[in-house]
Image (cartoon, rainbow, N blue to C red; front, side, top):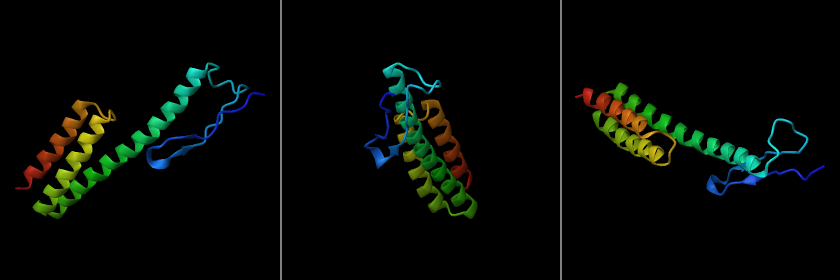
Length: 114
């Protein structure tokens, strides 16, 4: 039996992934580079999930401020939301059209308050 690959650790946010691959597992590729791509994809998916969650939270804060009717709070929440969305776009989590659409819709909603 081959030695399994386990505990691939990323340096970002100290996330530890426990993936154990053995040669006997028929669902995985036998090529070393393919095994590495599976691990890498799982790491990226986990990090992307965290970034997307942050974007959703920022968006919810903007809409909550709009619902409360506080223009200053909505503007402040919009500024931080735009920053978060743009960072997600620059990291490659979202396509540039998606980021600009999200920013545009939020800005439009805040401007409608006036």
